[in-house]
Image 1: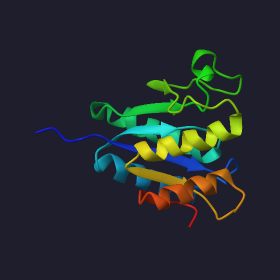
Image 2: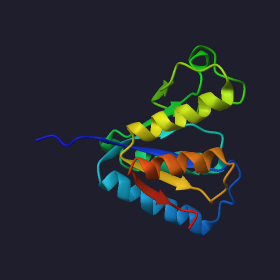
Image 3: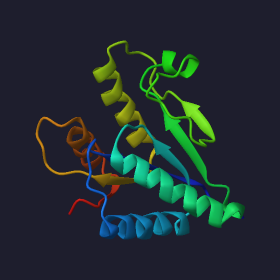
Length: 155
């Protein structure tokens, strides 16, 4: 009997103070996710929290290679798949995707890409504080509205 693979997205504000406590808490949540059969991790970003989660998922992947963990970078614009922007650091993603393809305006595309990532996810790891004009906070509100399983490491 095979178990269904689950998906996790990671979102946070651009600037996050990465402390030893945050690293430890994020590592625990990633370990829990993997124990719960999360095998696909979606990343979209240019945030310190995304980078932290990527590093911890990579650490887990390297420690337990038999688990076949997949790291996926999700671009906001379809054209970025063909020609990645200068800010993009290739790292070691197993896949590059663009979950939404209908937007040209960058900020709108990011928002709808985030919603598409949430829709695909069984779990979302956040580092979000309540900031009404924040795109990351709007993404958090969408996940709450969709009744997704959420872990907010900000609190």
